[in-house]
Length: 181
Image (cartoon, rainbow, N blue to C red):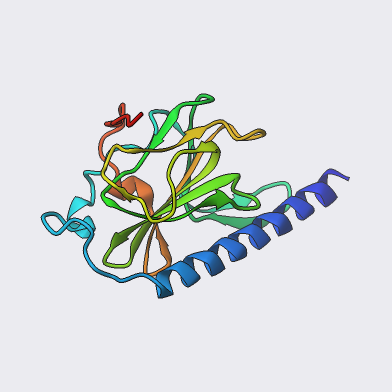
């Protein structure tokens, strides 16, 4: 029975990953591709981005084996531990292209940073950002605490391809959060 439940969970994870890929592809095709911050393109921020929330990484990027099923599962992002109502902030300048509920990801915000780079912030309890809104690094997009989750799900993509966020964000620590009330 446990194996059956795990197999169902694995199928659900694959389905949600496919739906997210479809959404990102759609958003990518409608992106202008222009730099959002002409002074410092997103590609120049690699290794220096602020953390979207302050917390330890619970789930890392990449493929790992599920020993109970003997199967492999790939994580396209990372999950960072976050307290309920903890602010989730943008890692770079951009334009919000998606801010809504998305099955399997709670409330989801996607920011277009130009140059075909996007950052994704899932498992938010409440959204603050609105589609079309321009944001700067540190601007609050949402608040953590979606029921049944233990933190923020975070991805960075280029041309729709998931990149390891740990290569992009700087040394662990409190992110720079600018509050706009």
